[in-house]
Length: 148
Image (cartoon, rainbow, N blue to C red; front, side, top):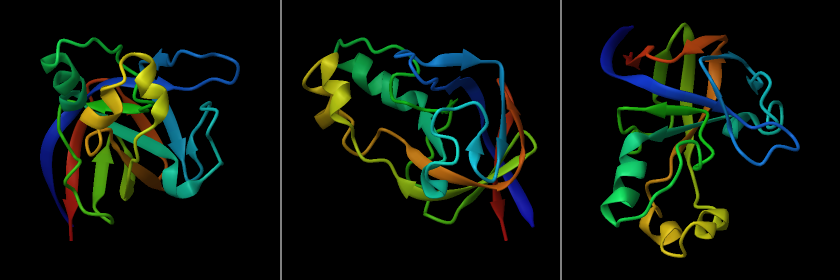
């Protein structure tokens, strides 16, 4: 199996029960049930990791709107835009391997900042992945697309 480097991890986040804001982490641990410590851990394997691109935040900024990093609900924020990757594509990040499982639908909670945001990010909120190989992911880790 070959690999192609496409970018790196900018930020990592988890959601905690009872906490409205995302918690930024320098590293996260993943297993087949998702991101350990995240409130969505072991909830839905197909949606266990949300990956977003900095391009989403830049798109919002182009409309003179501000949205804090992590607000999209992502676990992993990249400097690479993976939204066009096909379901089934495998990514190696840190020593974990993830497989793209579905594209993310837009959430109405994004309208809290501005009612235009759900429309602006209709196809650019993020992608979901499931964990194929457990591992650790840290800020600045490189991202590789694994090719068969």
